Length: 173
Image (tube, rainbow, N blue to C red):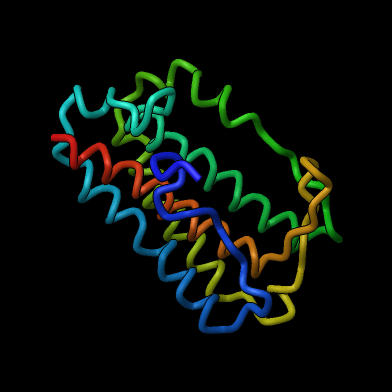
């Protein structure tokens, strides 16, 4: 496995997801916005345009991607709570990362959105019951069924995964 591409490894869901896992994962989601903000607040334009690996996204693209991905994730939770095992809408993250706003917009636009989104998302997640956590959606890529409990873990991992990418850029300075 390429350590630059997966600096914290790939997500591995525990066979049994406990309330301890859920609490830790929600805590990771809750703390991510301030960790990102603190880390990148002094990034130079050069750092923002630096990819975390060869053929990887720039720091700017990573920050905007985190918002795009987590915004989609929040909506998936809402669908799973209001529909019976819905097939969610996937998006092409690689193409989204190539859009002009992802490549050029000031990072504070996505950082502000990540802060607001995560505050509302965490409030929502903390209110889910054990029965709610069993609700699921179907991801059309591979027709994979994902429970809300597992998806909390996926998004906690996803945030830390990209935070590690941003840390690798910070260490180049």
